[in-house]
Length: 346
Ligand SMILES: [Fe+2]
Image (cartoon, rainbow, N blue to C red; front, top):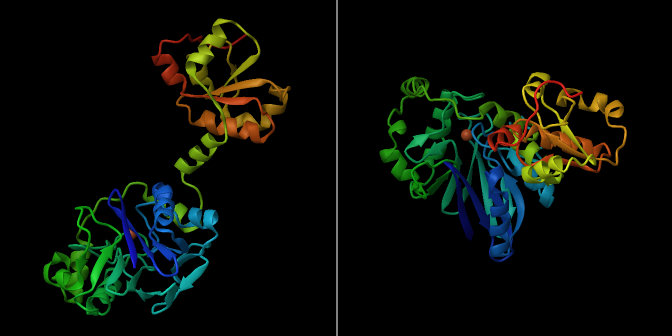
């Protein structure tokens, strides 16, 4: 078996591959690591057959949907997953065939309603059902401490104590543990009586993970994160440096339209001399009256350089093929001591 563990912050994803057939599966991939997964598969001469999420993640952005689009490979989750883009929905006990490997799902609700563990030879991928020295939390949407108690004590913990466990999170750099070790040492597993276990889980008072609403929104819908929107837009437009814009203003060439897409107050309190004002919120509706020549060179700017990137992508998609975004925003322009005008432009 080819095996790789990939860490991203406290999140873990796993690549498993069959040496004989070159088939592979990826478990709990995270959006920022896409190039790494593809590189690992290439290094081992593997082809992904399945992209698997052990559950709906609330604390990181799943890469399954994007990788599925890139590679034409099915996304696999438990049947209870709310995401509409799942290609293959498993029941507990179902097997996935990965060349000579057999990956068996085990339905383990509790951390979420759609949580499953995946057993493979000498190991089990426990998702957030069982962590090293902890369990998944049960206070996020669809969590259920009673269900987790049953999934652990009637399910995972009844497996062979020698099985290695590979969780979806590990914050202390340990590579794995075993079922037996967790039964002996995991503080959360010492309350074995159902009522006591539920009381303990409900009194943990954990802080909310960052980006929880965005993670749930995108993981459940397959929609894009804000960072993805910005990076897609940035990849589809050219940029102009601030120094280049400054030089262009200084030679007073009128072949460049500087378009400031901030709100009126921000524009009037200081803008690039000669900049034309058209707020982002009105861009599509007013563009036909305000920018009559689609062949003109248009430099789009905003406060931080992010909205202007989106606006430039919009303009180019509308046929303004001379639109470029400022590399940076008016904040950086101001801090660089470059010239600004106040009030309205004549
Ligand atoms: Fe989770």
